Image (tube, rainbow, N blue to C red; front, side, top):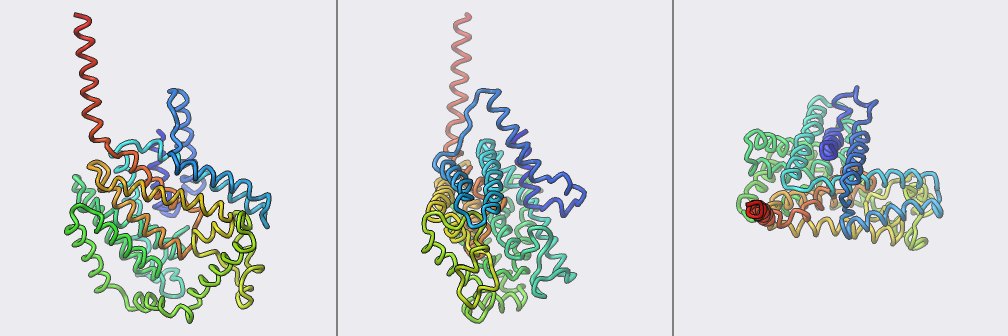
Length: 410
């Protein structure tokens, strides 16, 4: 039941299911499935007398971040905002630990990854449809979709993480249906990323595909797939995509890019003034007027960088815990790259997470369900290392026990 709920949570988050089926909004499917998953996990572990893994160093870092965030209202410049942020982080930590405890086999990891791939078709196709029909285009030309995907940057970074995973299904799935769906998800995902005109999305996609291609055992096949994607982008991307992407080199004349520079300057100023604890969870924008350059004080922005956001809001303590949490997840997935069971998905998931993080270093979404879901899926790979070698040993042990029992009864 817990695993089924985790799959439901993944579909709800990635498909933004309430926008596909609006009548589900009253049920809050993402929150409901997360609560059912955590509740079922705890009930099963308690009733069965089984231990609950906190995921080693990663789990300790995450729990430490939760505790530090929960304490932050004591020194926050906006205690009520910090209290709400702490509650949200606890919810996300709960679903993270649920995923780590129920994704205990390659089959389950594949099911969960496949669910994310299929669910990603909703925002991808929705974005393409909005662009074709010129519906709610941001800045007049940037495609987006519904819900959290109304922000083109959030939409792009979420799809960046899925494209390598979809490519794995397209190239290696034993199911013809999943090969077709994987190819469709990868193709529409790349198309949607282009149509968002997200510069961070373009950089994140390039990093994700490069890392995925170079980390594989069959590099030529992966490189060929990555090159095909790049060639398709080069041929079919609209001129507006290239115009906006090239503006990275002239950021000082671009208000959007300049806003990120101001936000990073604010994070730096906060860190100098409050290096250990920051201004409190979720309080970055409320500190803007105090710490921003004089020319920018009338336009408060988010931090536009996940790590600098935490540095400004939770100080060096929170920053260190987040770095340990994310770094351990990436290194754990990398350790599984050559594993015969989890290697293929580990490479794709870690490449997707790396691309997502690059995007988030230009966007700054900290309390994002997508982020914790992707970190959990990547971290799960490490627990599957060596599982293929252990299974035959377990079967031999069971057979030996049966033989011993038979000889005793004889």
